Length: 285
Ligand code: AMP
Image (cartoon, rainbow, N blue to C red; front, top):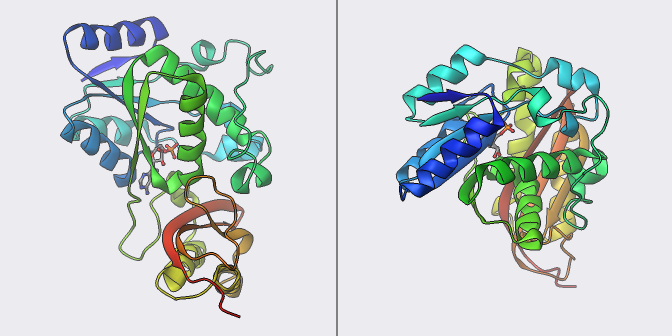
């Protein structure tokens, strides 16, 4: 496994793969790797891509400096997991290379309006600007590639797909299913920050989603059920919504069919998100 730190080496590595007729599979991460991340490495590998993983804790997508300071970092585990899962190249770019002006803001920011303004975008102003800007840079350096993202961050995929479409970037975005713990909790690097009781409360997010999955409810009933279940467990609910799976526009009660339920909540000061596909029944009265 190659380990690179500079943009020049990384750009050159990706170009050499393409020159040799190999396809590049990019997996952007912020480290503190777990089985959710490695499922993306495995998917990229299974499609025959040269797997290029980036680890960069991007300060521009954190609104809260405490959240950034507390973000878990597990470099030894990351290295071991990358090796075990056949990652070909692990890139850990420095902050100086990624954002040379930091902590000043850069002059260039990528903003994805519409899908980026809703849900997480509304609750965390600037978050998706940080995400879109860093992903645009990862794509610019990596060049033509397939890029693998987890549905755990469902809205993030929608934002990235919109950006790729609007800017005609030479990237195929591949969404991969959510990996969960045995108790249903979606794997997340932030789970490392949860105390035992908080982890128990956190399970309410997936329980809320599973409760409505095959419930035959209409959209606003689903929202009510999910919110109540999370609140009863002591979760501070940021949102519990049912939306169009592509545009993320909230479902109306007279609509039925395949939608996406998304929840976000704060447990013990840690913000967690989760989502699942749901089949919504239209309201009949
Ligand atoms: P992060 O390191 O949290 O920025 O995540 C890097 C990538 O891994 C993103 O595309 C995430 O959506 C994905 N990911 C994180 N957790 C999971 C999970 N539990 N299942 C599937 N993908 C995940």
